Every structure is written in C-alpha cells, then in structure tokens.
Image (cartoon, rainbow, N blue to C red; front, side):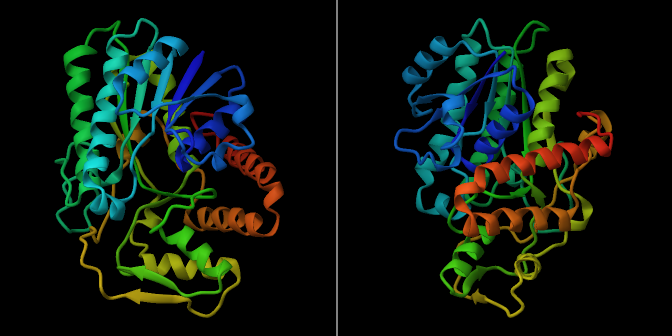
Length: 353
C-alpha cells in the first residue's frame, strides 16, 4: 500500500512517519513538504521516504504529484498550526488550511487509486463559548481567531466534499479527526509552552507565559496517531466510519492549566524554582477553556489512551532532556519511545494493537 502524508516535516507529520516506519513496514511511504521547509524532523528517516516538494495551494503541482505517486491512502496533516501566527498571517492561514484542504480533496475526487483520506484538524474547530464544557462532534463549529476559524472551515469543506462527491459505497472514504494539544518530543514551534520552556532552560532565561490560567487538553503525540491508523483500517472495512471524530485526552488533563503544566514539566526536569514570567500585555484573544469529548471514539472505535497525563509529561521531558544531552542519539531514543508506547498499548490489550 502507498501512503501519502502531507505536512510530513512538521511535528505531528514526522511522528506519524516514524510510527508507520516502525510498525507498518509493508507500507510504501511518501510525503509532501513545502519548498524550503526545514527537514530536521525527518533528517534521519528521509532515506526511507519518497519526499515531494510542493505547495498545497498550487493545485497543478499537487495534481502532478498525485498522478506520479498514485497513493492508496492520504493523511492530510499540512497546516499553518499556530494561533498567534494566524493573527500575523491571516491570509496565509486561511489559504493553507482551507484552500489546501480543498485542493487535496479535489485531487481525491479525480483519482482512480485513492481509497481514503483522513484530514487532521483541531480541537479549536468548535465555536468556543468560554465555558468548561467538553465539545462533541455534534456541537457547532466556529472560531474566535483566524486559526480556529480556518480549522472549522476545513471541517465544513470536508463534509461538503464527502456529501457531494464521496457518498457512494464505492467512493473514497473521508474522515476528519479533532485532536487535543499534543505534546512530545520534536516540537520547536514558537509560542508553544513546552518548546518555549526548553529554550528558556537552555538559555538560562525566564519563560514568558501568556494566559497561565488557561486550560488545554494535553495528550501525548502518539495517542491521536495510533487512533488515526486504526480509524483508517475501520474506514477501509466499512464506510460508516467516514465522519468526524474527537481524539482527545484523559480526564486528568482537562482542568490542567498552562501554569500547572509549566510547574509539572519543571519538576520533571529537576528545576525547583519558578522560571515563569507572566505576560500581562496580551491583547490577542485566545480561548480560555479547551475541552473535547471523545466518548464516541471510545464507544465505536474502542480507543483508549495509552498514557495518563503524568506519563505523557515524563515521556515529553525525557525526549527534550535527551536531545539537549545526547543530540546525536535522539533518533534511536525516539524509536525506543515508539516501541515502548506500542508495547504498553499491547499490555493494555487495546483494540488497535
């Protein structure tokens, strides 16, 4: 089977590539990356992947690549994924996250080989009303910032394409997944708590934290990815799985604020004193509470988390500490983390193992 990952050089895309290469070695893996995208996340596995350079906003180049590869399955992960950056670059955010998704779906519409596609959106796709409620797949979509609105729009266009062009039993099967705030090694994005913390530690600086009392649905990066692959299997078996799914974290993370997370990762790192500076000059809106209800995936897919919040924090900090101390060995360490995660899932006798 030929699998294509868009956004393969990003944090989530590269983790998915690692996971597939280590657990599904019969798959021929392809990836799309933007021109001049940093290749750091896939540097030590790129010889195992067929990389194509393209901009998803350029339909002609995307058509060329699809005709060249003739993939069987697509995981569409490419996106502008930062809320703060969406305020600085709203046009780029809407273009990449909406038009890029439309272009991928239109290539599927005109393909004779593609059997299915999973579009990775976000927990931020819901119309957030500022309460602590957990949003489920039937709740209203929306967005109070360009990024969130772009992800809601991506969900809407995916539904439109599914209903308009992929409704037959023989059609390609299209689903979306809405994950929580994934953490784990390899993420160096700006304006994200854990990468900012690691840079502060390395540079012996304080970390400037926006909105320390805001909550986020923290989860280990491999959790939604193992779910994605299991969903792909179920979609191939039955078309009824071609719809929207929440893949969120365990209940112990749902009231965990940024301030609490910073304290937890500091303790795990071995730092006892506070290194936080609160940013009191934050004029850009960011939703205070984020929470999603994943009971549908638990009931119909049998999905359960492998790691609780403390285990997630331990695995995340372990990766970054290893990177700072033994950078040349980080790929072997990453592979070992994937193996440990998979072994632990098997011990729990989870449905997808």
